[in-house]
Length: 403
Image (cartoon, rainbow, N blue to C red; front, side):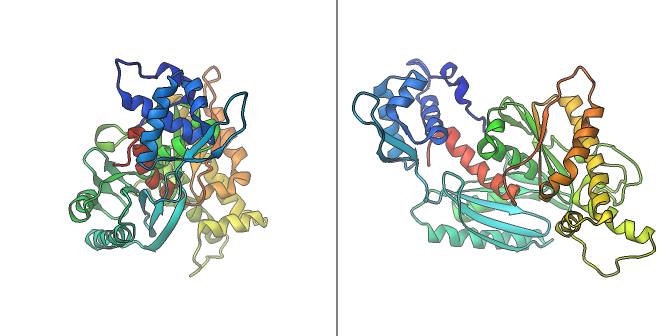
């Protein structure tokens, strides 16, 4: 969904000969970003008539999107009634399908998670469909009076227009029609998107303020693979059938520590993903004649050891950060974004890898080209879950309706 930028809102205001819904979107987004805010403030900021704002506010209250929260200070006249988003009521169900675990969460209009459940992800598509349908069905039964919708984040190529996952490499799933099943069997709307695209939507709506004011940026999700979400003019660019942004397969080096999901050993994914970091760490012990044996190595473990000063852990992180920076430089040269945002567990090691990423990326950018900001995401430990929820919330803010 295209995000409304408040600094440009005056140029977007609908006049009497345009659509009333545009004004509803603008008023709702002013309440979202500027709360607590009064009707008079909204009218002053948007240059809409007070009567128009009041009518829209009444409608948004009736549909359960905003609420009055008390009286503000007077600026000379009558004390204003303040408005904010109506929170605490479930409006969105997010399904985050990860290769290791799947998370289902319920959130309110502000994106606050009200409840969530994790369970292991199976390679069996039919089994996972049944699990998801059963758990969503229980949520619907619990919140019978709520207008719920579902957003699903997947580590693969998703055709959002047709609500179908075309391909998930990790599981070798093709044409997974979970959205259609949710709609037909449970009677509620569901949308699906690639995990990196979902994160891009979340950054648009719930990221740091500096990013919410930017119209062109790229998100880089570092997980078992690498995914990218591209935002142009406040709109996620998905390409034909959702296949845009598969930069994890661009060539950045040779003899990577692990094979890519495509089978190669020269892809960005095989050189800079979580799997690459773990593979590089394990290889350092094998080269020294001290294999790790049956030890289970995870990225959090490597980050913890690096923070304690272990050389092999620090080297694995920084070597992988070098390749992460090479890929980011390629994105910057090709797409010239205003910012690049890195998300995933790797951001917990940001203080260790930041300088390496920035220095490599800087060297790869032609001197006279713009140098965008490169930063870690602020979406928290489960950005893909926030992304799944954002697919629903962005739709609600874009349409300014609960139905």
